[in-house]
Each structure stands twice: as structure tokens, then as C-alpha cells.
Length: 241
Image (cartoon, rainbow, N blue to C red; front, top):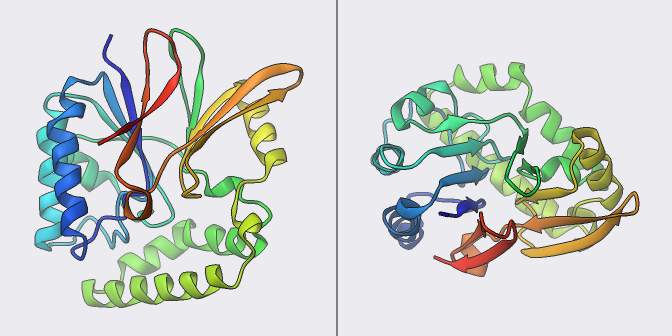
């Protein structure tokens, strides 16, 4: 049976033409023979709104529209593209998912999420996340002009980079207790997420039962990789795009 594919953290922008071409090849190649594609956030380095008229935004939307004519594509918001909305979904045919979504498979349910909500040791980030994801902040952002939003996005990226550089590596990873609590809340023992840029498959015990957490790669620093969930065995396998 065709695999289910997962990606996150491509951080596409007009400044990453090679990544855009890799994304194009991925959509026109492996995705066309897949069961479905799940994008778990941060497809964009910054999405400033569905009304962005730039050639870059138009190109990515057209690529996705061409893809959804053949294969279902699902999208979860990340910390870089939380302004992506219903207009984008209508234009592309992409189906928007809630921040935590359980994917039922023949073998086991998998919890899908971007992953930043699991980094609970980084209290400063969690405070900022709450503000940026609020409806009030999004409304305020969308009231700005396109140039103002671009300037604000650049400012946020700069501040984020400075804050990240000053933090210990372990603080920016997921908290295991948060992982387990989130799994229990959804009644699952399998999880896929991105955000941390630390691709791996972690095996552990959850309430005496085997559990698994698969982390997606980012495409800028670690190469173009997708996770394939084999529909015959139910196992996650990393594939180079």
C-alpha cells in the first residue's frame, strides 16, 4: 500500500531557491505515489498572511494546488506560519488540522503535532508562543500592511535567533514528561512531530507499554528528508527526498 508521508521545518522563503526546487521535486515525485502528505508546520520561514501577493507565495500555493489535485495534503501550523488561514486552504486544497491531531492507521493511532508545545522547559518561549498564537495578536498582525508585516516578521526572527543562541541546548528540546502527558491525554503511544530539528525515532515505555516518538528533520541544515509511515508494517522510515 502507498505510504503516508510527513515533513516539517522546510523554512521556505524567497532566499531559499534550492529548497523550493527540492520541495517541487518532492511534490511531483514521491508525493504523487503516496497515500497522503502531512506538513507539520514551519513550511515557511515566515508566512505573513494569505493576502501576500508575492511571486514566492503564489508559486508555493500553485505547487500545492497541483499536488492536492492528485493526493490529499494536510497542514498543521508551526511557529513560523501561524498566520496561514482559510484562504490559503481554499486556494491550495490543503486541509488544515488542529494543533494536535490523531491519525488513525491500521496498526496504531499516531498523534501529530508541530512539537513546540512540548518544549515546556523553555518558559520564555512558551510565554511568547501564547501571545503569538492568540487571536488578538493575529488580528493585530493582519491589520498591518504587507511591508509592515514583513518588517515585523524579520524582527521576530532576529529576536528569536538571539534568544536561541543564549539558551542551553537541552532547554530547547521537548520535555519527556510533557510528551508522555500529551500522549496520555490523547490515548496514544505513538507520536510524530517536528520543530526541534533533532531527527530521530525514540523508543521508550509509557505506563508499562512500548511507545515511540518520531522527530522530523529540518531541510535547511540536515538535508531534505521525509518520514514515511509504512502502511504494511506501521513503522516510520526516513527517506531522502
